[in-house]
Amino acid sequence: MIFLKIAWRNIWRNKKRSIIILISIVIGVIAIIFFEALSVGFVNQMVNNQIGIHTAHIQIHKNGFNEEKLIQNYLPNSSKILNELRQLNEIKHMSQRIISYGLITTAENSTGILIAGVIPEEEKNVTKISEFLIEGSYFLTNKKEILISKRLAKSMDLSIDDKVVLLASRVDGKVGSELFRVVGIFQTPNSVFDKSTIYITLVDAQEVFGLNNNISEIAIVSSNLNEVAKLKDKIAKIIGAEYEVLSYHDLIPTLVMQQEMTGNWMLIIYIIIGLAMIFGIINTFLMSVFERINEFGVLKAIGMNEQKLLLMIVYESLILGIIGAIVGSIFGLSLVVYFSKVGLNFALFSEGLSAWGIAAIIYPEIVFFSIIKAFLVVGSISLLASLYPALKALQLQPVKAIRYV
Amino acid sequence: MIKIENLKKIYHDNGLPVKALDNISLEFQKGEFTVIAGSSGSGKTTLLNLIGALDKPTEGKILFEGEDLSLKSKSQLAELRLYKLGFVFQAYNLIPVLTAIENVEFTMILMKIPEKERRERAYKILEELNVANLADKKPNEMSGGEQQRVAVARAIVTNPSVVLADEPTANLDSHTGSQLMDLMEKLNRDRDITFIFSTHDPIVIERGRRHITLRDGKVVSDTSKCLQ
Image 1 (cartoon, rainbow over the protein chains, first blue to last red):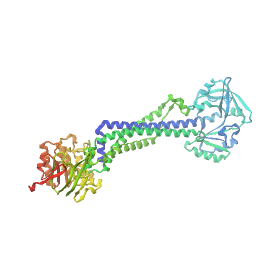
Image 2 (image 1 turned 90 degrees about the vertical axis):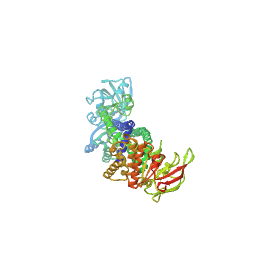
Image 3 (image 1 turned 180 degrees about the vertical axis):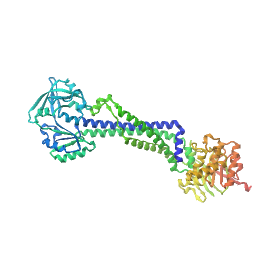
Image 4 (image 1 turned 45 degrees about the vertical axis):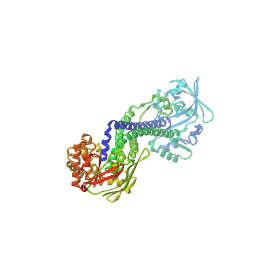
């Protein structure tokens, strides 16, 4: 206890210096907590957007469909599969789709696109496309209505009520074409998706592709995001090897890469913060220890052994580290709570962010584990920072330490 | 009690060897009140530091109660300093962040003496040295003489066999210095503590019952008052 008391009083011998160390620790902890929350918010937003815009948690196709999305690979026995899937409690929502490539043309322009034929009411439960409408409305009827993105509307000079023609290769090998009216314009946070996807109703898609009552894809939302892999395996077992059951990880492999990349960036941030803190603390502790070398010599002379002396010096940095971590955590958490409500506006980088499928406003998410992490990081840094000067002080013979100038 | 045999200490000053002690052999008996005198650089502080196991000799050995100090580990030496030795320094060297009573208690904490007992012992010793009124004051709130009394209290509170005092009166005026010597003589008499001083202060030299004079690292005289 006396060592803690001495350490505590030693800390306040030079108030300015201790406050400077404390401030640097507090800033470090705030940075760790805030960046962690921001990165989790970033990743979750990225995952939710990518899943929520179109992919869903799981997709079922006929084997080999996903690679080329050829309409000839439509889903056989879809009604039977749908009936089987409806028995599973783990499935929250399903959407029947026809997905394939085609051409959208106007009198002046044409471009290749991915045509998504959906049942409007089902799709509403599975993806957020209806929420991303910025002009017009979601499907009004099931008759020849098309939803296009703002990006596509701009590049093809289209607006609400304009007419477009969709051309696509039919299942019988002929070319199908139908005239559609633009009823809604959407804008998602994913610019790549917006560039290439349009929505029509399933009935119209069946007509365009000559598919009768068939579909090419079932999109599924699991009732638990953490158990998607389990559900995927279960479905695969039920429906058999003729079908491919893909989770969002399989469908968007870049998502895993992006998650890993964000994790790596966090590690780099930790290292930078750690280095800045460690050098600041070492520098200050060196000053603090070396100006007290005589005192340490006296303590050794009156019989204090090296372990206790080491403990006393280490206590000083640990106390500062703990106070800094507590104060930093309070400020860091408050900051995260505030920005998790109002969001952090990165409008300046919105172009770049939309390529990652992220909106310009990122909402940091509270991660309680980051507080533990901050305590561990700061604790180890404080310990490391004080060990070097402490060991230096211990190396001196008592007589040299007493006379140290 | 303390036996010094052929003790040599060579320092290196900018790579050049400097003989601080040159082949010294001495013996100290229990209860002695010894003054090691000599001019600056004669080697008296070096000798005191070696006796106190604060430094290591280049050659020769020191036997403390029959045990060779050179064979002891760092932690054994720390224990010896804690239990057997008391130090009084020229610059008092109290722990600045502790009060007088905490400074006195500190060595007893290292000895793991229970809190109640150590508080009582510390207070009693401060009373004995007439500084009990300063118990809650920190060193920077005390005069030099007061600090040195507290330092003496710290040195003797553990009942050491030997107190080593390096120029204890150097920073004190003659009156305070004299009072301090009265106190240490009393402790020597009452508690049978061996005192070894290094000094060139006449006040201290005059009180010593045994005088050892060093010059250039050698003993040039070793006399005792009772023999005179």
